[in-house]
Image (cartoon, rainbow, N blue to C red; front, side, top):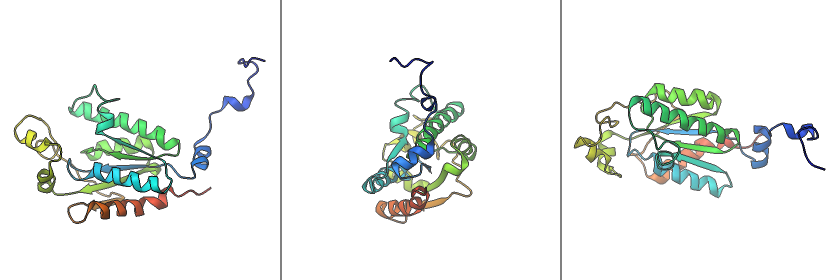
Length: 203
């Protein structure tokens, strides 16, 4: 017998709920939002945390410039309008992952308080954990992993955060990690210890 709109059982008309998916995964979905200057260590810590969580059997998704700017946001530049739209789209994607019970690690400069508040409101305040990955500008510039500061100093990158565009530190982050004062391994451990109570499954 064919399944037509007239004979589909009512149970199939409803999508599974977030609680169903979290029960399946035995974890709670959250968005861990890592903010900080370029070179502060956000991507390094995101990758390290993802590995630690994987070892614990926890399903994650990392969102950062490498997999967002080259895909869903590849038509955006770095104007104020485009930066806001960049974060808006990222937050909407993160929200979908969180609603599926996935621990979503977002690694973005997201330089202003307003832009991070936008992300928080889209994802939902109760699902949004803001972590300030803090390192002094001179440390970030000395690292200059991608050569961006050198280009910014030469004028090749206009409106570069920390050089020609401001960064507004979080006023009350859920956690602050000073990556210039400890090893990456120690920083990942701090992140892991902080996050674990938020994602541990409670029926």
